[in-house]
Amino acid sequence: MPKGLLFGSRSFDLRHLTMLVLLAVMLILPLFGDAYLLRVATRVIVLSMVAISLDILLGYGGLISFGHAMFLGSGGYVLGVLTYLGIGNGFVVYPAAIALSVVLACIVGMIVLRTVGVYFIMITLAFAQMLYYLANGIRIGENYGGDEGLPLPSRTDFLGALNFNDPAVFHYFTLAILVAILYVSYKLVNSRFGRVIKACRDNERRAKSLGYNTFGYRLVAFMISGGIAGLAGALHMNLQKFVSPDELHWIISGDLLIMVIVGGANSLIGPIIGTGVFVLLEEGISNLTEHWMAIFGPMLILIVLFGRRGIYGLIKPKGEDG
Amino acid sequence: MTEAVLKVEGLTKRFGALIANEDVDLDVQPGEVHAVIGPNGAGKTTFVSQLAGELRPDHGRILLGGRDVTALPVHKRARLGLARSYQITSVIPSFSALENVAFAAQAIDGNSFKFWKPARSVDHLNEKAAAILAEIGLGHRQDILVKNMSHGEHRQLEIAMALATDPKVLLLDEPTAGMGPAATEGMIAFLDTLKGRYAILMIEHDMDVVFSLADRISALVNGRRVATERPDQIRQNAEVRRAYLGDKADKLNVSRSKASPGGDTSC
Ligand SMILES: Nc1ncnc2c1ncn2[C@@H]1O[C@H](COP(=O)(O)OP(=O)(O)OP(=O)(O)O)[C@@H](O)[C@H]1O
Ligand SMILES: [Mg+2]
Image 1 (tube, rainbow over the protein chains, first blue to last red):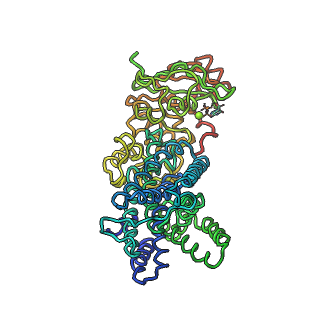
Image 2: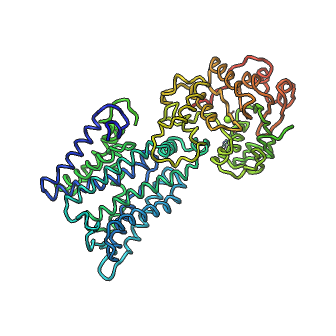
Image 3: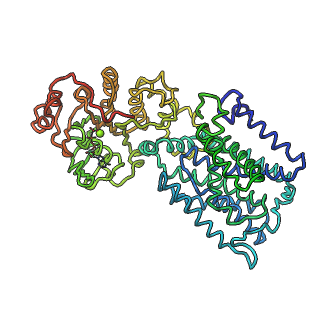
């Protein structure tokens, strides 16, 4: 990719450096052969995708979705259930996971996008909780599903091309997908479509009076976001080899919001950094103490109070708005 | 008379017990500037909001080019050529001046389900926006973020955005609200260049603006239209004089008057 392409500015700055360092770390990590570290890193990559998809709504669209974990769940469950049904071909289950998540986003979006502000937050939350209970009802035979969750019965196979049982292969695969998502999202938020989404965030009334069907544009944004998150949900299932209703719990939706806000909403790098920080702290502090949220909570408040654009706000060049 | 571009019949709007508009009939002819005057709280903005579709009337019909648009949502009316500027400036604060106008131009350039090409490099939108900004006198400010622009510039940008949608009818809600005398002169001169090119419904407190531009003037008092006259006749209208007792009665007679009082000039 040409320099400056991804960040819209001509010169190399702290953001580019951060991204390059992160990319380098992610590329080198599998070489150390530390299974635990690699797993954490892959988890950061997969959750980053969800955080980016959430930020398309939150940072660019001004839509605070408090139910984004529903797509993490929909992607995971599609993969799980199809695999139980004997469909383990990645070229089938992955598109299916994305498609179902897009359909889910369409249905949910048609309802939630009729509300704004606090009501939007509440109703997205309500939907996710509804799906949480629905997921509790997904049972396969006597032993699987329900609140126990579904283990992945066999590995997802890409016609022999990729061995997902090799953590390094899976890691590089998710990394490639993340880079692709980053690029597509960059194109999206800067496109004419993205311009409409941003304008709706700033002043929906004006967008309407200029002739924009703001509901339609927001619905499509919601579907795109849901599709990306659904893809990540399927990858998450492959990583954990397990999916349970907990994946859709509102706490996960809250964690995702925290990742975006801590990293810096309305940027594409912010959510990645936020996810990295969140997962590392979660792993790091929770190894020290059970009550890790008591430590993380105040840190979070400090970050939001002092870095108005999260961590991204600290590394972006002064005066730049994007 | 030719067929009105915009025709309003029996428009009534209540807010609880308050009757904001009562049985208002009004029309705008092709190329005409029809000004609506009236004291604060007379129901002028309420009237415009119903025309634009942001408020639903309790009774009455709105015809745009002969078509009944009373039930259409805001964006569909806009696509039929109804453009509005706001009394309280309403722009996209995180965009530059150019991008605000390009965004307006984009609204009529097919749909915006265009996901790949950077919006900033769509030349025909940028060129159209730049031309309109130059025409309105903001050419040198096009790259400034609107949150860093002055109030007067915001007022100009409001109009530029409305124009970029190639409207048939312009609804201007106090285009000079809160502007100083010099800026008001500039705005009058600019609006004068629009005369004849668009059908314009203009709400205005500033009598200089009204008398410089209007072909017809309607007065709204307590939600009722009490008069529609040519400018040289409105001063003689008894109902209007009664409504404008005191300082405003003088305003109707003198040619030089101060800008409208505040209270609606924030942005
Ligand atoms: N959404 C609303 N709910 C209740 N009352 C309203 C609403 N909007 C306006 N009003 C009331 O309706 C009346 C007409 O208001 P409107 O804003 O249309 O007046 P206006 O003629 O535009 O006044 P101004 O010259 O101050 O701009 C006022 O008494 C106002 O308080
Ligand atoms: Mg008003």
